[in-house]
Amino acid sequence: MNDQTVICAIATAPGMGAIAVIRLSGKGCIEVCDRLFVSPSGKRLVNARPNTVHFGKIVDSEELVDEVLVTVFRAPHSFTGEDSIEISCHGSTYIQQRILQLLINSGARLAAPGEFTQRAFLNGKMDLSQAEAVADLIASSSATAHKMALSQMRGGFSDELMKLRVELLHITSLLELELDFSEEDVEFADRSELHSIAVGIDTLISRLCDSFSLGNVIKNGIPVAIVGNTNVGKSTLLNALLKEDRAIVSDIEGTTRDVIEDTINLQGITFRFIDTAGIRHTDDKVENMGIERTFSKIEQARIVLLLIDATKEINQFLPYYTQVKEHISPDTRLLILLNKTDQSDSPDTLLSTIAPLSSGEFILPISAKTGHNIPHLVDQLVSAVNMEALTSGDVIVSNTRHYEALTHARSAIERVIAGLDSHLSGEFISQDIRECLHYLGEITGQITTDEVLGNIFKNFCIGK
Image (tube, rainbow, N blue to C red; front, side, top):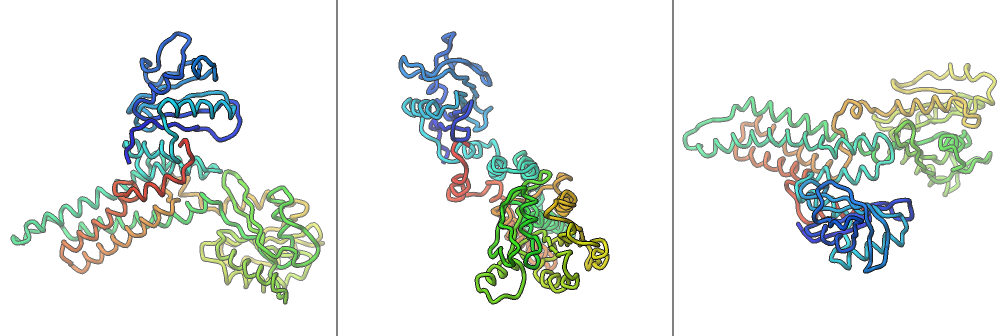
């Protein structure tokens, strides 16, 4: 897969803009660019020093195409580890495509999706987990997702995995050394020490696995289900949070019959709000299907907003509370919202009749219509997300492929611990250690296949 041919692509977003960047990489890319580039001084790019920028023109025979800036990078000090060129031209789509076609006519070929990053991986500029973090960084839509991807791209995750591999290699080397002297009945490894190391490895892998639940929702948005009885103001609340008329609002009960979703960035965190069908008994088949989806979304949510109508009898609260609690997972945060307080004569009296029924639950009087206490609700949503791991600098796993590999690695190291407890032969224990090493190596790319690489890089944008 280590192709050295010259590749080229537009690296900036498609469409018209002030500036566009066209990237080249590969052996001979500087010579390819030199065939089109004319400097006012007459100097050629092949004689240029590395990491320098040059003003000039791109010409097609005698015809001027555009005035450009060309940046020259020399191997191995470039993103790909190869000789590289970046052409900054004006952002006209015609100019971009014209220059790209001229480069192809001069000996380059169009890059495949993610091929620049793939070459960086193959040339040892980054491991596979860092390469995947590049795609996550480009796709990040919030401060938290950006911080998480940046940490992984800089090697935070890779450093953790390297520590694990070093300790695993230490264990297996001692055990396999014993096998070489099995006839002499020599023991090089202290079983209690190996057990302690294995437990430490298991603890670290388990922590990485457990972080996936947070990492995944940060990457894709924190799912927040808005639930309650019909006509309690769920759609009005969604519109208030999004600051637009996203959901239909009506006095007619059962208006929302399907799930409505939208995302918004609140204080650097992306939330995915889910407006659900009102919970009630009905003979309407379509509405019942929506109510079934409501309970499904409650099970998937990290935060549930349970709305109560402050203008109605408060004793209606308990049945809906009980139904919702039956579908909430232990890690889900429940926020109880007493809505329509602008229409209630004594919201404080109603609020005092509802005490938090479980630890961690929070009750807040709001008015989705007037916006009363909506900023306070936003603060509660942000605080409900446990960001301590991210702010403390701990590694957070957000990639499904990494999570699956870590799960297999955890199973293998747990077999190692069980084998040490059962005084199994070092040969069997070493096999489980090698399996653990294999799955950790899959994450960083030390052990990989062309098929895996193809699946990873095909999802990148062209030009990266």
